[in-house]
Image 1 (cartoon, one colour):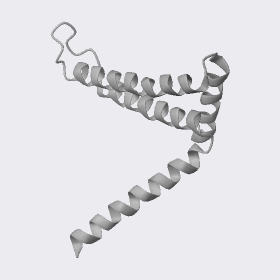
Image 2 (spheres, one colour):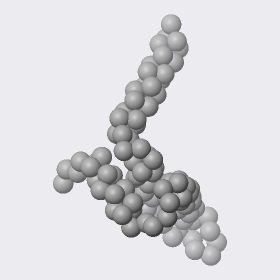
Image 3 (cartoon, one colour):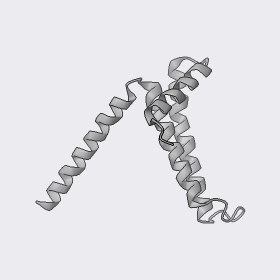
Image 4 (tube, helix red, strand yellow):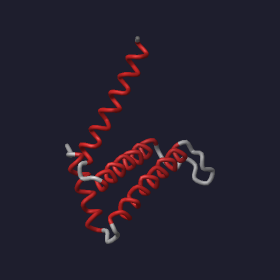
Length: 111
């Protein structure tokens, strides 16, 4: 299955916007807090995958961790889309800056 990622993000963000009766600013704040909630689930899954909770033992797998990381990424993308409908362009421009910065560091190391 080939999913158009940004279209799926637009659809998810749109459904969340349609569902909420809160003012726009509060919807954005809550979406940003959702990123932290999802990151906490990554931490819980890592602890479970490593068996570091004495009460639960090995309660998660590394596949669970991967899924939780995906949830963080998706939640962040939805947050960006809810903040600005030009999220795809903003993300691409930011990514270009990261790649350019990384290439400069590699070139400096080689020189």
